[in-house]
Length: 178
Image 1 (cartoon, rainbow, N blue to C red):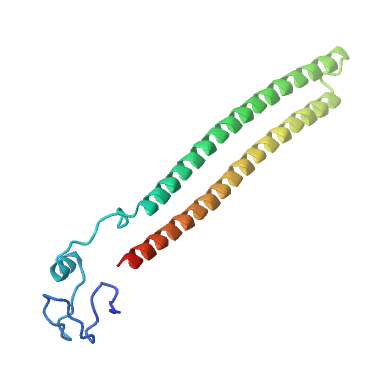
Image 2: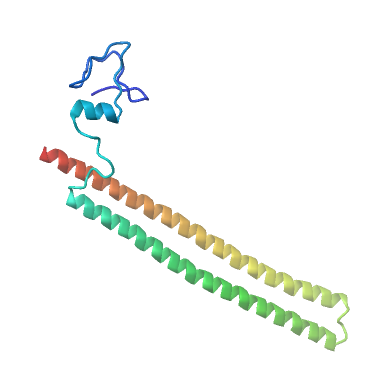
């Protein structure tokens, strides 16, 4: 095993010298940058996915990406449906509040109590009841979105673990072939 420091350089106390490279001395450390890897091995450092030849890993990765796309599409569809219901509920609540307040106003007006304290209290109580119901709807919506976000995080975490396991399996298959 080769020890390197945080900049990717081999520490000066090691005697390892890659082929084609000058020997390391205390004042001459070897950098393991891309150019040094190419000079030492004659090969470029692979870019991107190093498991392109492993069809099992590629199919697992494709399934992983498809599962995430499907999950996000379902989540968006469900949230759109929820939002439609939420807006409909708010509209219905607003219409019902307007009717209730008009009916209350007509009732107190018909009895000659429109300018009484009783009307003011009843009107205020009705308005407060509807405001509480609207607050409850908003709280339910917040809870719904929070729950969706938590479920999405858990799902992505689970899928990331599955992809990590697929990578480890691909590494094991690659090592077994060598």
